[in-house]
Length: 273
Image 1 (tube, rainbow, N blue to C red):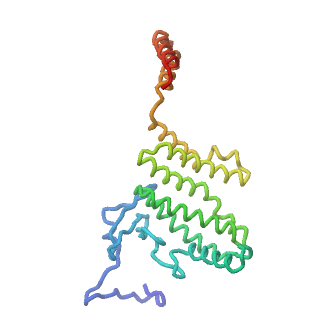
Image 2: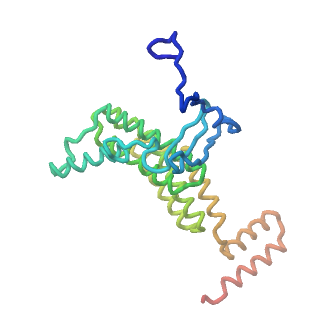
Image 3: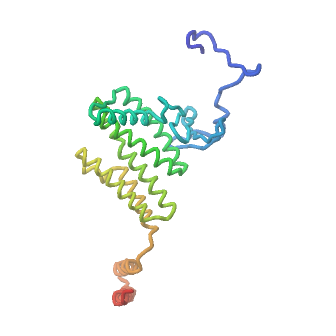
């Protein structure tokens, strides 16, 4: 309908004398919306560049794979975050300090809206196992939290995004650890998870909620991943025998237990290399 006159129908646009439809139904054919599922795909855009599409209930979202997800360049920068970080750098260069640099409520709101676009993209990339992209976009959104948390004029703008820090940190950590895991660098993956857990712990300590750390969904996800990684580590032969001995004793299989004790003693008595 025409926005100025809702009683008057809008004529379809014509291309080379024929009506062209902008109906997206053909694009969605065979790609049904599945509630509770993040359903995404890569496609080749009309510009020849790869794009991301996410199926949503009323249609789809399309995103660029790099730069700002909507493909725009605010103020000539790759993102609003880059623009305001540049303004902060200019301020510091001019005055020698970050003092008196502030973000208005409207600027913080625009940064939040932009962060939501990157959130949709890093979710899509995680499903597609593009972990490098997830690491990039989650690190970028954490910078938004840091910038608003430090420079927003209004206290609410400084705090409103902080509730998402554990989640973004968890996704950043999972993606980073997954990169190591895929290359069988298990110890490095575990070190990344430990670092992520400590970062989340610091968040709860900062807000006086230390007791909430163990119950945090994000912490449980990372610890579950850590257990999965540890199962891939080579088992220490002595530790394996010790576990077998404990199970044998528990089952009252004393004959097997005696043999296992002998094997452990031989290992203890063996000269070190």
